Length: 361
Image 1 (cartoon, rainbow, N blue to C red):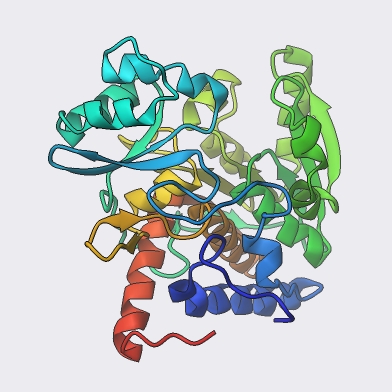
Image 2 (image 1 turned 60 degrees about the horizontal axis):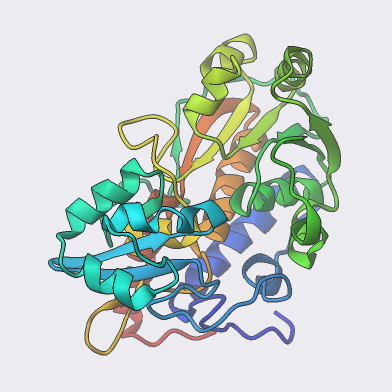
C-alpha cells in the first residue's frame, strides 16, 4: 500500500477490510480482460490535494453537509451548490442570514425531523435521515437485472461512454480506462467541469486516460450524435436521474432491446427506478441514509470519511459491470449511493463483530 496512511477525514478504518475486498476483486476481474488494475487507497479515497478537508464530525470533511438535530432525531442536510444556501430561509420559514448556523440549528431543533425532511426535499435539497435505507443486495451492493442477451463484442476491449460527473461515475470509468478499454467522456457544454475543478489533481486522476467530447444536449443535432454513440457502446455510465434522460428521448430499456449485450450503469442517490428516484443525493448525505456513520461518545451520529458513498459506489458499480463483461452479457446496473452505503455499513458491522472490534490496516 505504499506510504499512504488511512485517515479519518478521507477513509474510515472500519471499512479497510471492505476496501481490500473491493480492490482485490477489481484486480482479479480486470486481469481476465486486460491490464489488471491495482488501486491504491490514496488514489480512490483521498482528494485532499483538490478539496479543503477538515476533520469529519457533525460537519462533513468537505464542509458542505451537516448533521442537524430536530426535536425527535437527526437528519443530514447537504448544501454543496451555491444556490442551496439561498434556500435556507425558505427551509426554516424565516428571513434569516443563511450563514448564521446557530440560528438555523435552533429553528430546526423546534421541528420534527420528518417535517424538516419534507420541506428540504420539496426545495430540491439533498437531505436524509440516518439509516433510512436498507439493502438486500449482496456484495458489491448494487442491483442488476437479469442478463438481457449475449454481447457481440468478441475479444475486443469494450467501448465505454462515460456520461457521468462528480466522483462515483468518473471513478468507475477510470477503472475501465486503466484496464485498457476505450472510454469516451461525453460532457454537456452547459454543465461542463470548468475552472479549478477541471484542473484539480482529483479530476485528472479520474479522467486523464479518457477521450473527451463536448456536446450541446439542447441541440437535437447533438442529441442525435449522442444517441448514435450510445447505440454503438458496450458500456454506458451515467449519474443522471431517469427524468433527465427521458427529456432527451433516451430510454435505457429501449437501447438495451436494440443491443442486448449493452451494460448500462446508472449511478443515482436512491435508484434509477422506484418511488425515491426523484431524490437528489451526494456522497455524504447518501452515506448517512445508508447508516454509514460513526458514533460520537454520546451515541450521536458523526460523518464517516469524505463523501464515502461516492468512491464505494464507483468501485461497486465497476465490479458488477466488469463481471458482466467477462461473461459477454448485458444488463442494467442500478447503483444507488444510499444502498451501497447500507451494504457497506452492514459489512463493516459484521467485520467488527467477528474481529471483536479490532480491525487492522
